[in-house]
Each structure stands twice: as structure tokens, then as C-alpha cells.
Amino acid sequence: DAGVIQSPRHEVTEMGQEVTLRCKPISGHNSLFWYRQTMMRGLELLIYFNNNVPIDDSGMPEDRFSAKMPNASFSTLKIQPSEPRDSAVYFCASTQETGYGYTFGSGTRLTVV
Amino acid sequence: QKEVEQDPGPLSVPEGAIVSLNCTYSNSAFQYFMWYRQYSRKGPELLMYTYSSGNKEDGRFTAQVDKSSKYISLFIRDSQPSDSATYLCAMIYNNAGNMLTFGGGTRLMVKP
Image (cartoon, rainbow over all chains, first blue to last red; front, side, top):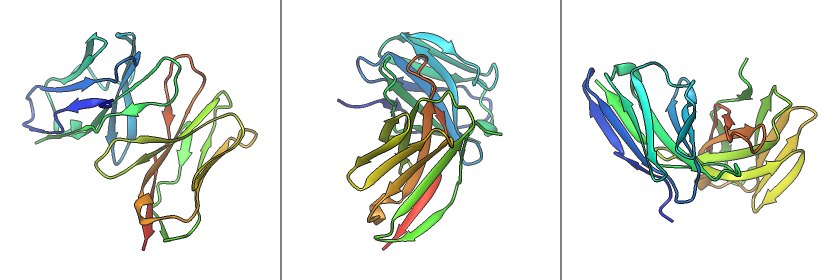
């Protein structure tokens, strides 16, 4: 099992550019989560999918953020336009519907300059 | 007030010491409790998982839940430099919804 796979590992972009983060959950996991982690705010849940359907997106900071899950094996988080305050580590996590903990990916470190 | 409170540390201990990491929470509806370990520049990894009150032991790690006090702990015996990481507690209301609530994490440093 390759675990949760995120790409890219690092992303540096200029303010105003579009950024797309990608995630491949563990096969058989029905729930997928996008988190953002910063020193000041810790881990923040952005959006949660169950069976590819967005269930709770109340954590998405603003309309500049959008997420999709077109199928069970792929999800994207897009920021457009990006701003310096979006700089953070973005984690994707997945779990089976039974809710036994989450498996996290290695994260994407985003820097917006 | 946050739902889950955790001292951010850092907590610095000598190798071999017993470490106690703690979280308090405000919502008595939480049923499942977890501890995650996060090494620098890595994603959190599940360390311990417990249900309701009581103790659970796994090697050098013991997770303790006291629901009456809304308090959970993680004990590490014979701490090693490789235990140096950030430890996050997490909890969930029940299996429905699967949305974990995380503490802010405690940074632990074990010095050789």
C-alpha cells in the first residue's frame, strides 16, 4: 500500500497565480479530507468528501478555494488567485467509513510570494 | 474556547525519561480518542486509538482517557531521541461523519 499520495511536495508561486494541489487516497477509503497546517492555527479542516461527494466545506476560507473529487482515487484543491497568506502546508487524508483514524499524506508545502 | 486544548510546549526531556502529554476537551459527546505523531516536514501518523474511558498500552506508549474529567493523556516510557516530534491529540463524536477534531499539538524534544 503506497499510502496517501500528494503532489507536488513543494510549490512556490507568485501572488495572483492559480495553484492546484493533488491527492490520491488509499484504495478502498471512502472519506477524504483536505487540511491546512500553519504554526499559528495548527491543523484546520478545509473540506471533507464522503464517497466523492463534498459533505462539509465550511472550513474553506473563501471563494478563492475550491476542491473537487471526480472519482474515488483522485482529488484536487485549487486556489485562484493565490495570496501570500495562503502559504502553509496542505495535507490530504483518507479513511474508511468506519472512522478508524485518518491516514495522512506527506503534504504540499505551498509558498506564495 | 477551543473544543480541544493542548499545551504547545516545547517539552524538553532527557533520554530515558517518562513523558506525559495531555489534552482537555469541552464536549462530552466525544467518544473516540487518538494520538498522532508528526515528525518535522511529514504528515501526522496515527499512534494510538482508544474508545471511551480507560487505558490502552502499546509498547512504550500508554493512552489514557478520563471522560469524567474530559482529559486524555499519552505516556511515553523510556523516551528516545527518535520520539522527538509533535504529538497531536484528536477526537471524534462517533463513527458517523468521521470528522476528527485536533488539538494544536505539543512539540516534544528528547535530548540524548
